[in-house]
Amino acid sequence: MTSHNNILRASALVLVPAILVLAGCGRAQPSAGAPPAPEVAVITLVPRTVSITDELPGRTTAYRIAEVRPQVSGIVQKRLFSEGGEVKAGEQLLQIDPATYRAALSSAQAALKRAEARLVTARLLEERYTPLIEANAVSKQDYDDAVAARAQAEADVAAARAQVEAAEINLAYTKVLSPISGRIGRALVTEGALVTKEQDQPLALIQQLDPIYVDITQSSTEMLRLQRQLADGVLQKDAKNQAEVTLTLEDGTVYSERGKLQFSEVSVDPSTGAVVLRAIFPNPRRELLPGMFVRAQLTQGVRHDALLVPQRGVSRNQKGEATVMVVGEDNKVVERVVRADRVIGGAWLITEGLAPQERVVVDGLQKIRPGMEVRAVAAAEQGASPGTQTDPTATSARPAQASDAQPGSAPAQVTGASGSSSSSSKGAVAPDGAQRDALAPEVARR
Image (cartoon, rainbow, N blue to C red):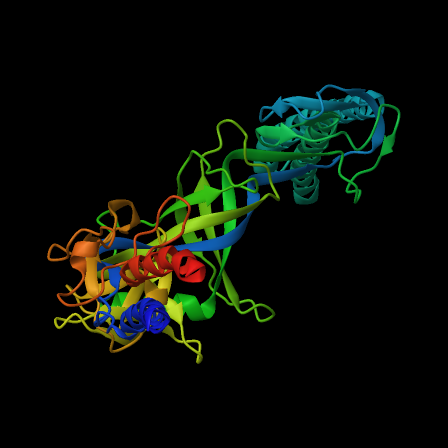
């Protein structure tokens, strides 16, 4: 009987922990409840006035270019300029041997004196015949011959004077002068070289670099679109009614001087479909050299109702269309197809698809989809682009806490420094397991 009681007691000790374990496992877990709405950062669109600027490629061109060529033939005796230096208009560059031209001038001057002497004789003869013809002392023919001789002598004097002037000009041309002020390149001939009048090869090249031209190319399609927007009033000219141009150099630096647009070409290049625009820039430090590639920022007009969306808030759908996520008044997300015209200061200019005061998602796009309810928070100030403002009705972004959980739901997991998490369900089972482990040695002994 005693042994039977002992067996019943041992069986009860084994069954009690098992019942407790089964009761713990069968206990209903707290309901997790609905997840909280995801947080997204939004901006509120506000119209603003922006300048519509196009960035176009261009090449620099010298303001003036002069090819120095000889106007007389001869041997170059001296080079009087420094290669690569600045020269002034009228400054002597080269000296051609003047000996033959000096002799030609002397000969022309002698011929002039001879003609002037003949003129004196002819004039005196005419003066003598004048009273004689009135008295019929000489024939009419002799008097006419005297008058013709005087006129011919005057013509010979005029021709001789022209020959003297030509000889003087040729002698002056032996001094090769600079036709313009500017920077001269390398000498293309040396002392001792024979040069000829109207030869193809220039002696040197002079370019005026201050000011300097920039030839900009713009597609005719873009030009027509801008003209149409100006005509429709979408764009307006600035107060000065002049287009200012800024330059970005080949190394990415911005040129310190501003230029003015002078004119646009009157025809379109049929091979490229582009129109050439010419701007003029001051170049006092000679930073710009002819032939440099630059990028010109040209202000085409002013838009007063521009809506700008940061680039990170604009994506593309499968059709390649620009889309944005808009948060409605019911805090639900709507995908909107928009027209992104151009980038201005790191933001897209939206011309169609959005209206002022709409809230556009700029951060958290990967967490949402159309139709989902979200919690809108104000975008960071540094993330807001010009022409936008942070949503005044949105709450500040903050990390989710356990107190945000809905009543009756399970507590949120809190991650420690090691990154592991604990759960309340594990806390409920742990005491039953510890009690079972404590009773197991005693049962084994019995």
